[in-house]
Amino acid sequence: MEDDDGRRRSTGVPALRALGPPMSSDAAPQEPFAAPDDHAIVVGINHYRPGFPALQGCINDAELFREWLVSPLGGGLNPANVQPLLSQQPADPDDDAAWQPVRDTIYTRLRRFRNRFTATGQRVGRRLYLFYAGHGVAWPNRPFDSGLVLSNSELPEPLYAIPGRQIIEAMQRDHTFEELVVFMDCCAEVRGTGSVDAQTLDLRADPDYPLGANNFCGRAAGWNASTGERMLDHPRGAGRDPLLQGVFTHALLTVLWRTAAGVEVRSDELGGHVIAEAEALDPCEERRPRFYPSEEHAAPIVFAARTAQPVDMANADGEVTVVLSDPARGLAVIGGDAQTVVLNRPGPVRAEQSIRLAPGIYEFRPASGPPPDPAVLCKVVATSSGAVIRVQL
View 1 (cartoon, helix red, strand yellow):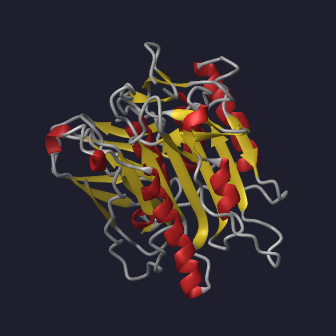
View 2 (cartoon, rainbow, N blue to C red; view 1 turned 135 degrees about the vertical axis):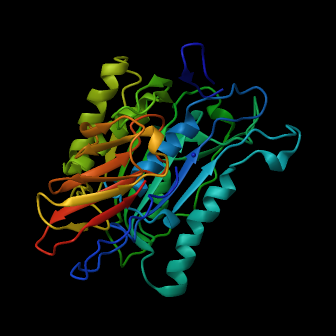
């Protein structure tokens, strides 16, 4: 449930806009996505049956995480490989089928990965991300795990939940992915534990595959502890409006977005940085995030700084032409980690703006009002091709 202090207790972002190619035939072809073989299931649940107070920040959490996943400055995933499952308030609360997402919906998507491997004999991809935000519950007899409560649960029972680390155990010997990453912004409170329906995926044993997939799990709180949501700045900053979000999600994405500044974020360092960010907002020890690396002593999972679709530019003093759909809102250019304002021209301005930029990564947006959704991003690379870039905003 959510108490008056915003605690989460037990009882939506589109793809990046494609940029036009440089006006030069010398540009080398580029891969459209930096991590084309990565996949993700992203779950955000604000709405539950009567008896569960509605949450307000979990869908925001899911959309914020998806934004990082599909950004070429973040996860670099193909948006088609990211499956968002977001709750909606049913028009008729008595309609059982209207309460979504449910556990079987998530399990069906996980089993489809296994079916693809069975049919092809090939791995589905390099990495699978699972992200859960919603009410949570402690997992029976597993103090190092917790479960996301699904929206069709009832009080006092049944509580339908899907676990975090137990999913890893069920999938890590499946051959479907090389790496498994799970992040859970939900509590781990003991209340309701006895009525949790603990069905999980079947664990597949394979004596010829002694090491499971490399894996990493992070969750928002310790055993029998709640986590919280509150109004916080956007994890990327740079003038974006504050919004309700989970403390854990905010801390996690604040660290992950450092990839946009060219910083390599690794799983063996991620936990410490996220804990520091979270404790600055909430110093309670019980609500301190917990992280669990692979038990196979594998190399750290790397959340690298990668950029899709680099765009060539004539030189460090070259020209970029920006075509504005709404000149009244002006033009702003944000450099590097989206914290540095390179240019800010309040509107009204000309519908076509020519600017000069040094090589680097930039985000283009109006100087006033909300930024484009999806973001308009461009990587400028110094060449001698004499290219001119056109960016549509």
